[in-house]
Length: 342
Image 1 (tube, rainbow, N blue to C red):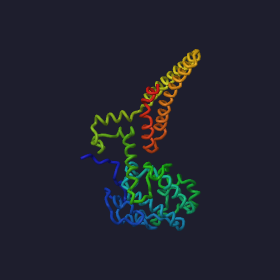
Image 2: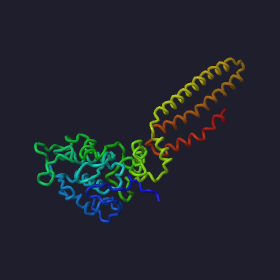
Image 3: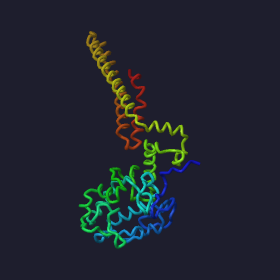
């Protein structure tokens, strides 16, 4: 039986989270999309919707009544934090008395962040960072002494400021779109499945591939180490090592080779053109010219798709896999073309 991946399908060690995710048939309202596999209980999901919640005694209305269109984003944010089992790649140690773990730099989809800011920009708040610095003298959060309530658009001039600063960098603003598989969605249609499962797998793979992760992998401390034999893990470490120098040498040699080929090709074409022009017979002259043009076209047919395929590979990492397959399928049948043309 393969070992459980420590970054996937897990709940963080925090105040209200379950020890492991599982089905919850009766999650409340906006938390319902996670009911099939959740880290929160039904009671937690219900409390997440209250203005004065018992979860953290946090008052959304610290600068007046928060508009419903704005509050729904904070409820959704709470549902994601409390219920999602797909935040493993971003779980970090927390230095607080009420939780051992938190999330850090979760890549939030562009639409989620910008809609959040747009719906809340006219609300007012007295703080940029809602994680700390409140006056808790009455048992609930109040604005610190001397602070002023200002519009969201002044405290958070951009959507990026809101998403990254309000919860101490729990989220990271991205330019990735919903459905891209590269950003976490607060809002999704559960009938279409949870898109964050794929996102978590992608970032878990990236994290496991990083040199920092590989240096910390030991048989005693990492459950995922049992998945692969240690000889294979050693090879993975080599893959993750710094190869900039080797890459530079490879590109340098390839560039030198291509430059030499181009120079020799240019010289050969000049010599060929001179030989063609020296032919006195018009019939032989046209025949030689036809052979020369056929050779030039064969070279172009070979190198233009090659260049296009290289550009797609280098610059189209976020493009659909169909683009890579399409370019490869165009290039493949053209490989024998130069010899047949010549």
